[in-house]
Amino acid sequence: MTETLVRVDDSGAVRTLTLNRPQALNSFTTQMHEQLRSALDQAATDTAVRCLVITGAGRGFCAGQDLSDPAIAPDLTPGAQPKDIGALIEACYRPLALRIRAMPMPVVAAVNGVAAGAGANLALGCDMVVAARSASFIQAFSKIGLIPDCGGTWLLPRLVGRARALGLAMTGDKLPAEQAERMGLIWQCVDDAALMDTVQALAARLAAMPVKALAQTRLAMDAAGEMTLDQALQREAELQRGLGRAHDYQEGAAAFLHKRTPTFKDR
Image (tube, rainbow, N blue to C red; front, top):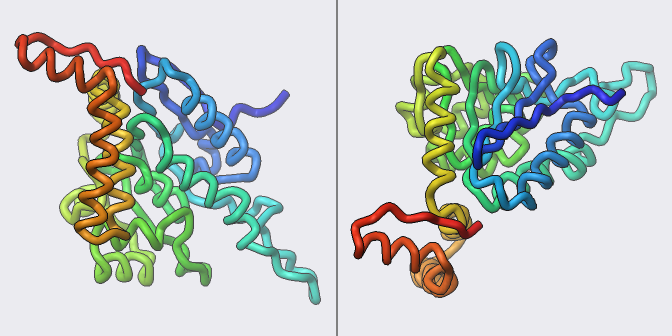
């Protein structure tokens, strides 16, 4: 029987994916990558899912790559060829980071403990990050002679600026959740006991909103970082043209004019 390394739970229009290797702080193996990628693909095509939550089982969110996994574990035999970590990035982490940023609904990370290495950047790649007060974020790569991956080199400077991004990446120091919130790395830090209630309430709120517009807001903001102002304005016009013809704009505008609660359906 295949071990369930990613649990899938639905509550209304909110789907929660729970990384499920608590004995290893939910660190990644190639098998867990496969299950997470499959779960993300399924959520992307399930029109009943209007918001996605990613969290971890036990006392950690995700400690990054499991260095004992055969795909990356160094062979210490004299003369052995080193593992091709770039191949692991191409096969696993690049598709994961791109899939998260292309999900057709909002994605919320519920960080319940340590988020280290690729685990930190998995969380930071989500649209909104809510962390327990006891949680922490660690760019642990420099400790083992590597650079941030899973999108870390792209995400960190955009979230906190070059100086803080380089400081976090070069030192590999633990960043407590409260400090991460203060510097704008994450959306919110809450008491441990309130984490999942806070996240589920946020996810339910997002699920009731026009999620197609929310997903395209992410798309537009990600693309705008590589554009001139004029190019960004052109892109806004293109996206607004499509959204303006969709159900949710018609419904939202009608509800506003008639002072009633809208019912959004697009995804």
